[in-house]
Image 1 (cartoon, rainbow, N blue to C red):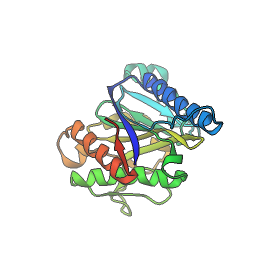
Image 2: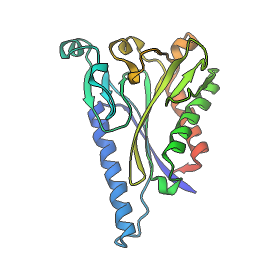
Image 3: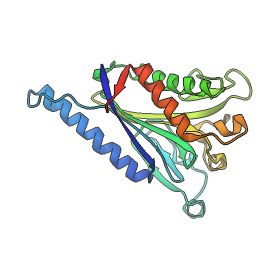
Image 4: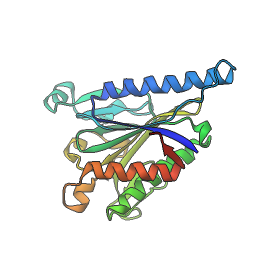
Length: 231
């Protein structure tokens, strides 16, 4: 059985969280190379990081900077940071009340298929939302998790963006739990101009226990990817 180390970073500055990911990412890749070259017998670890971030906008490699609709002065007034980062996807927002999950997985230990990996992440979120009474699904041609697919009121509740090198992953998903959705008004979310965003709080009409959502998602990840958590 595959093993994954669970890490809860709580509320962490985006850059600190990114640097932490990069450290683990490099560790896993270096161990893979060493084992391949016969210099080590150590099997790389896998990590699942959960956290929240203070207000921040991040722009992926394929994104357009014009999708950030406010200037530096307005960013400061919103207490928000902005980073260009090395994941796929366009621009998104992270902030308090949003559950962020970063899997640092060696996919050689799971399956070497990024498309399947993305669909498995989506499925873990879809199952999690269903446990809270929210029916969610996929929108053809789009990543992430959506509500009311096929209706004029399609809206995104979970954004995704990942990076992979040597079949090792980083970055991941951002699920809007109790997110202040007004911050999305200052971007074109994921570069999509004709779709809105939502949160579990907005859909259910009440604040949701974020720790409970995290625990359910943690369990669903273990089931879908078929791994145990290291003690």
